[in-house]
Length: 200
Image (cartoon, rainbow, N blue to C red; front, side, top):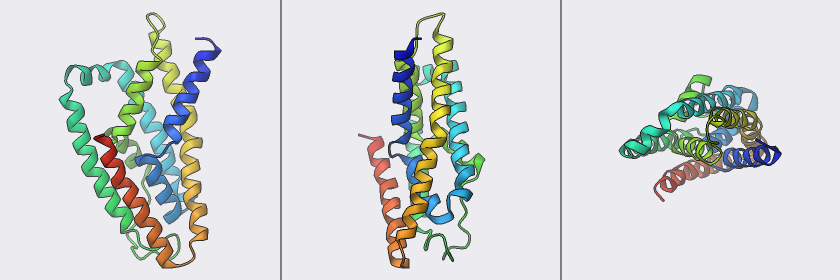
């Protein structure tokens, strides 16, 4: 596990984490609608929830998808349905940040964000791909699995925070309720689009 291995690993995990996907779209919407401070539990929930999922996959859960590919198909369907539900909630968020039309709207809690990783197809793909690509032969396989987990844990907070802060800053430009509702509608549309990408 030389310097090249670590540089490649951190570059891969950073790109996988910071590129648009269900988590980052939802973080942008949350940052816009509730501000970065109220979105921090969401940010932390993604980081720790995904890291825990990587640990479970590293300990053998990933082999279940190799033996029974139908499980991955079921996961895609369940994840797609939930993502469509979240897209509807983003669309219904109404005005952002100040005097929300939907007073029942609340940001994701830590536990909700952590549990969402288990139905997020992109999260599964990220975990399985990294653990397969950076796995080393025994006896180093345990250490390489731990390296992937640590790398994802290290990059998750800054990557997720970037999207939440982006949403918070964008909303300052959107002065009218119409513009803010357009912004929420766009994020909802991107969430729906991410569902389509699952099946490509």
